[in-house]
Every structure is written in structure tokens, then in C-alpha cells.
Image (cartoon, rainbow, N blue to C red; front, side, top):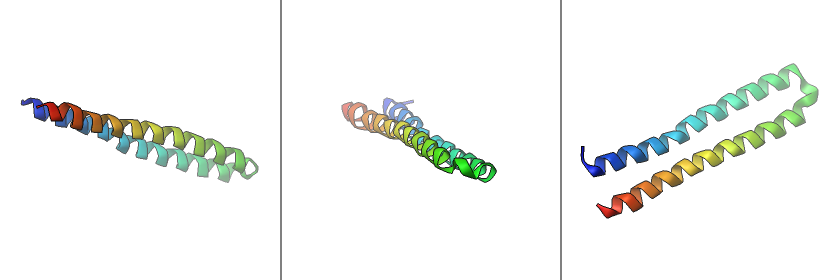
Length: 79
């Protein structure tokens, strides 16, 4: 396999992290809605924790995208 093909595969793997993050954020929202249905009094605490957790997960996805850009433009440009 060529070096350019390996770079493309590495960038695809780094980008795939964004898809996994989206799935996990959906699961977090599902569980938060379920928790609010079971305990409506704790809605504000649950919402705050959910938003904080989704924000941290989104940061992880942005880092994955940054890594894929670095792989493509810095390693890909040297070939």
C-alpha cells in the first residue's frame, strides 16, 4: 500500500471518532430524558450535567477532526 493510502486511512480513522461521539451524545440525551421522566424535580441538575457531558464529548470530536486535518495537510503535503 502506498504512503498516500496509509495517510488517507489514518485520517479516516481520526474522523470516525466524530461519528462515535455523535452516537454517544444521542445516548446521553436519551438517558437524560429518561431520568427527567423518572424524577422531574431534578430536571435542572440533570440538564446541566447533560450539557456539560455533551460539551466535553464534542471537544473530543473536534480534536479528532483537528488530528485528521493535521494528518492530511502536513503528512500528505510531504509526499
